[in-house]
Image (cartoon, rainbow, N blue to C red; front, side, top):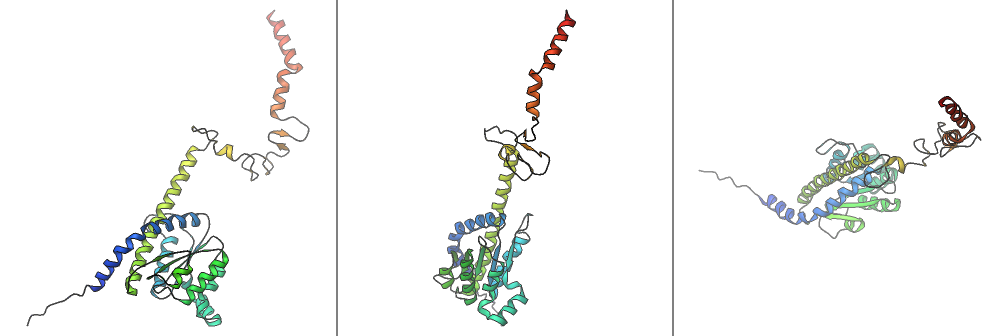
Amino acid sequence: MKTVSVTDTAHCDDLMKALEAFRDQGPLIERWGAELARRLGSGARLLVAGNGGSAAQAQHLTAELVGRYRDDRAPFSALALHADTSSTTAIANDYGVQEVFARQTAAHGRRGDVLMLLSTSGASANLLAAADRAHRLGMTVWALTGRPPNPLHLAADDALCVDAPVAATVQELHLVAVHMLCESFDRAVERGAADADAADAGAGDGRGDGRPGARSRTDGRVDGSGGGRTDGSDRGRVDGARTDGRGGAADRTAGRSAGPRTANARARRAEGDA
């Protein structure tokens, strides 16, 4: 008797259907990547959290930022809150499971940081508590969820919602979102580096485009690199003029050009010529 092998492709079919709608999220992910690069490049931090499979996706994102996605670049500050098992279990034991992410957000988060929360249901109480704590700290909250509307989608400042009926499909597209976010982030970092190189190349005493060079823009700094230095190398001077009663270099030069020594020297040269 011949055995016929039947492959169930329903999972793939569900994924492909959801992926078509997911393509519309491209501009949002691009915006997130550029904003994240700007903030982390300025010293801010990304905190991420999730439960179960979403925790794995969240930790995947931090690994790409602290390590690298494709090409080598500088590391950036990103923490997966669930990855600290000692803190997570201690907080759960002492304060309850609902506080495991909120308390860590309060410990590590600062105004201007970003908290990204991943949930297929969008209803996890511990993530909602973390979102509330982040907002009270002045942080920005982004969410990756399943079908909207859901509590986390409504609690976040911005949300990417995957329209799929199955949690597995939602998680798979969350991973796609993570990779697309890393690509957008790296492009933004590269653009920033290119802009910085261009600025350095144009810096100098003067620019061809009429804009002041770097040296001109840093005049008056008090960190020892420009005018008004406080490191002792221009001690007693204010913009080239000395404050100890002795003339500065420009004053002394001017004095020599019109002083009596110059007149006497001219008279002696005239006598020699005669």
